[in-house]
Image (cartoon, rainbow, N blue to C red; front, side):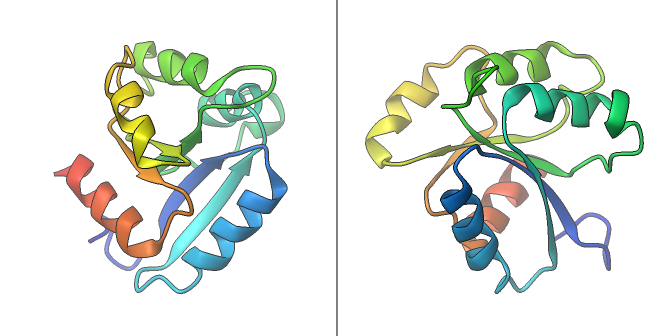
Length: 136
């Protein structure tokens, strides 16, 4: 499923809740495809990692961003806008994580819109299916 066969799918998880980070790591470790998870605790750190700024000059460019909307310093909505307006990053698929399926109408109305959304907790099958859908 990964375009770079033999290489792990690299995911930048932008999440400030340590419990959600641990849960996501635990669930995704059983994936049939190797998944490397990078963590950013807020939108400012995520943007610096993606733009390879400062301490992140050698950061790995992920294949996918998993984004929580409720973040400190720079909200997920602000980060999504920054990514979709940046000519060097707008190609990067962004999947927004939500706590309930009721949030999907809200997510569909975001402008700019994410490439998709996943309900927390994110499982490997749902993640891989969503990633495949946005990279075809």
